Image (cartoon, rainbow, N blue to C red; front, side, top):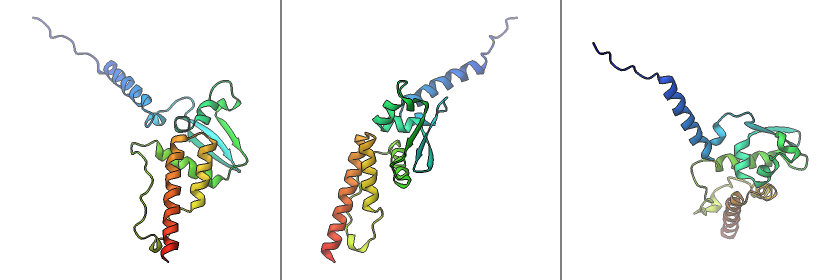
Length: 164
């Protein structure tokens, strides 16, 4: 009697699927920072605070960090130290970088309909300090977004003063 053909083992198929899905994740900058690697995070010391930030997020959004992570620089080991930056503003900057690594495209907020009746959600100085960090770390695309936020905040503040 003829025996049916043997079934393939699922382990070889699963590894092929895992490798394919892993390469798809690595090819998309929005998801590549989720993948574990030898050097998944970089350590950034700012004003007596230490930030552990995903390397993929920093490299994708900042030309400064992308260039600094190359072999010929001392920072290529994944450790940065900045003594002239306020930790609060650097944390806000990193938050913007992470949110910019999402699927949703960023657009500055629309002007408020009734600005005198609402309190400012973000202090204008916070926007300006983050904008300065975008300039320092060469984040051109994010700087355009932050500049739009600054213009909206200035416009809302001006209209609130004018109407009151």
